[in-house]
Length: 457
Image 1 (cartoon, rainbow, N blue to C red):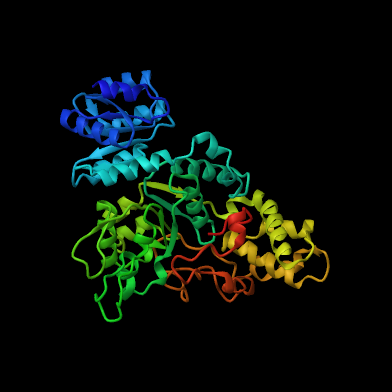
Image 2: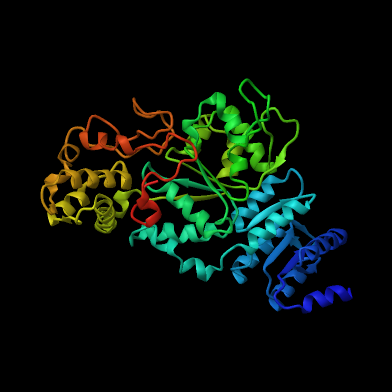
């Protein structure tokens, strides 16, 4: 006890609140945290935990889900209301993923399954201490990456800031080209895992026969051609974020294996006899409606609830028309800079035409329209005629937004849905060279994304 009191008096040591009604678990966590150089205050119930929270400042709270005078969810909500910057992790019994999901939805930073291993606790503590302060996040460069001042974009930025301070799985919905991958990157860059890998995977671009080995890796000799051990996406993203783009395209057989990896935080390589621990944050996205796919049996309900702990909706460009002049100007600045040409001016007629256009391809389409206009104009101004929007405005083949429902896509769509919005219309066909990430783990398609010049995913 004397040693513990000495630790509490040392300045600069992180302080952790442990809440559990079992004395042996409190002592075990206390000793484990002490080996990490962390001081722990222990509480046996909610009342004592609230008292300690009122009297002290902590870097992390670990709480069991079942307490004598309530449950861990009550403490999670209390901390969310009174200690906004305090990450709280819940300790769940084996097989109690429903409790873990409920806690994450209530605002918990992460969860730790029983029995708590030293490896898992170290990873959790590391994530917490790498988490930037809320003030630093709000003042960072990330805030300028998602351009626009419309209400829809401001709401998206606020939501991104909130979910970045959690380890909960995030499901990003929105039409093709609305900026889903950019949002995923911002969540990663603002969070505790920002110094670790961000691995984007286009689930629709991987053949079914290679799906398991690409995700989980394989052992030497597992199959013909496996001449050495190789890691998969989960191993590559260890400690960081795994972004599953077009997750609705996963076959049902792979959905089962992905579900287990997410629940157990462990993955088995093809040909291996044992599972390896994996520490990744899962962010998923699709332009389809996952709930509709669940209803039709094309997507597993249990996996849906693991992925859709927090939903972030990215608005379509037509919902943010007031942001089009700002976006268009920034895109033209970048494109002209890359071409070594002066930045052209959009005339009032051109801006009006862009404002009236429905943009089925969203910001990605806006960029392609401007890139084509920049290449074809003969002067320093871009007029409405230079945009070549006439075939898409008011015609019999007026474009439709990329579908968000779970119904069958229009004929000609690829399996990944990346050609959504293409048709006989020349302006949409001009997008073809820039659409789709055909290799899993590829970076964002346009440099503008990392410099705040576009919201295309």
